[in-house]
Amino acid sequence: MQTYLAPLSIILIFMSIVFVIAQVLKNNSIVDIFWSLGFCLLAFIFEMNAELYLQGVRGVTTTSTIIHYLVFIWGFRLAFHILMKNWNQPEDWRYINFRKLWTKKNIPQCLGALLQVFLLQGFFMFIIALPMIHSNQYFTPISNLTYVGIFLWLIGFIFEAVGDYQKNVFKKNPENKGKILTTGLWKYTRHPNYFGEALMWWSIWIISINFFHPIQTFISILSPITLTWLLTKVSGVPMLESKYKDNIVYQDYIKNTSAFVPKFW
Image 1 (cartoon, rainbow, N blue to C red):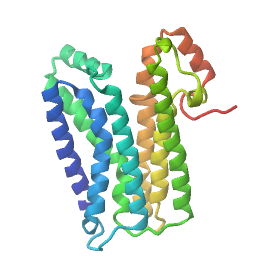
Image 2 (tube, rainbow, N blue to C red; image 1 turned 90 degrees about the horizontal axis):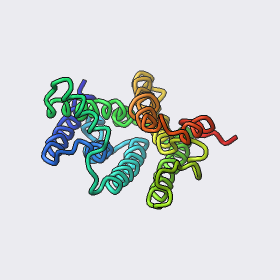
Image 3 (cartoon, helix red, strand yellow; image 1 turned 180 degrees about the vertical axis):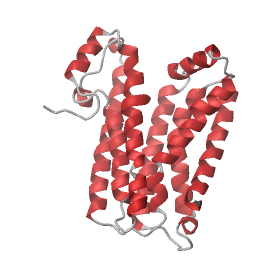
Image 4 (tube, one colour; image 1 turned 180 degrees about the horizontal axis):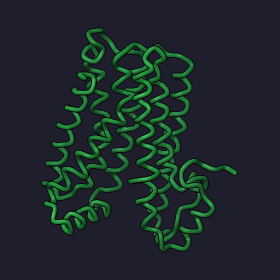
């Protein structure tokens, strides 16, 4: 139980602080920036206080250290990307719609934000962090599986980082206003950044696999499964593409391009 209590407490405190900041700024969409930083905070604490999570054994395991650095790279890049994208921008339309829904249902804005945005995202943060949490409980030496995971993680990172970069360049060009990006990685998948993020967390789970601890490994697979489900069925693809349901060009793009996994043929 202590395995989960410490990270849960860290996440609760962290998301509560972000909630307070968001209410002061009257902008709940800042959670998008801080969400990935929450994983970085967990990785930092695990790395700096390894003896707590290794039941008194000093020093971190080889694979757990690799996971921490991969999470750092993913988290800080994503947070910086969202920060630059949202700088001086009003609250994101998704959270504006949440506010309208809470008003319609007579739910206080602060309560709605706390439950539906911050605590809910904190819960998913905990689930997705499971491979990192479990990898700190036992020694897992580097193996061929580790290298496979790192290789797949690099592919995922390229898809997410390059996909975001291509989208930013496309949007900055005034001539592209109202147009749909269908070149670069966006030619092979409608959401290369989402695919890349999911692949990175599947890779982290692969790196965390320990055949001497099958129960923890089995529980940890909830991480990539949950993230993939969120991106493909909940807050990722469906929510974003709902904006284009009346866009004929985008509907044609849907017919000819994979939604998630790249299709090169």
